[in-house]
Amino acid sequence: MIRSMTGYSSGEVAFGTRRLAIEIRTVNTRFLDVSVKMPRTFLTLENEIKKLVAAHISRGKVEVTIQYAGQKNNGDSIQFDVPQARQICEQLRSLKTEVGLAGDVDVATLALFKDYFVREGDEPLDSEQLWQTLQPCLEQVLCSLKAMQAAEGAAMAADLNARLEDIAGRVAAITARAATSCAERLQALRERVKSLCDGIAVDEQRMLQEIALLADRSDITEELVRIKSHLAQFRTWLASTEAVGKRLDFLVQELYREVNTMGSKAADAEISAQVIAIKNELEKIREQVQNVM
Image 1 (cartoon, helix red, strand yellow):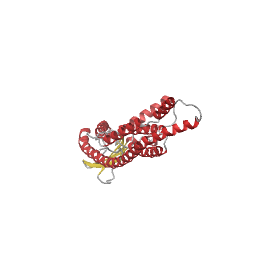
Image 2 (spheres, one colour; image 1 turned 45 degrees about the vertical axis):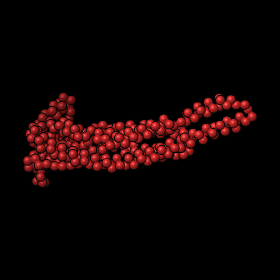
Image 3 (cartoon, one colour; image 1 turned 90 degrees about the horizontal axis):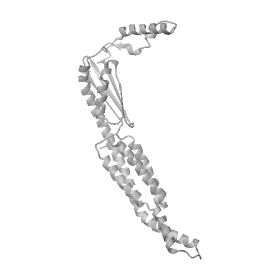
Image 4 (cartoon, one colour; image 1 turned 180 degrees about the vertical axis):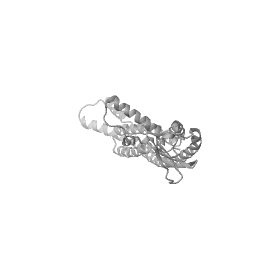
């Protein structure tokens, strides 16, 4: 069954005297785009986190947020990374001399380097131990996210199937009307030619050939066959467990193209009305499909 690209999930796990809180938000986009927001001391795990996300999610914009904090508001102190501060001062003073800048490095200057303010407990951690704690929680959050996406996908599939049934019914009505419409148009053409050529000898055989050519140009049998085939394929992919969003998007484009061609070829008021209704349904389907993984 299809899954939606939109979802949210969260979870947390204890790590020593503190906790790891994970949130994942997803929205639709054409490809997989994973971004991770987390403390600077966790950066060594960024690639592992992205690999794990990619193993569960194939498409969409995924925002992973990881927070590392005390179990309660215990007044953790904030410190500046002093060794880094010394290096910053040295580099800035060297730059000042090199390019001839005025002024000096002061506390206000160092305060601009926010990345070097460290909350107590955010000192370097053992990456392996951290990953052993973080990975199971991240897996659980991802599974919960996929369950939410699947539930939304099921609702989307029900809506899409209902719209496909509506289109199929209209295609059946067009098919039934097409044969009658063609015969009526041929008869109208014969009468029109006779009216225009009243009193003039007409080559009956040539007239029949020209009418047959016009009738062939307005025949929509091929379009109807392809539309029915696309609808069947759409239903098959809707029931698939694979990521089929791009395939469904392609099918909607093909259906729209066939319906457009059919509408331009069939000069019939009843068929035109059905074509307009089908286009309206396809537009709604297109909007839904944009969010299918």
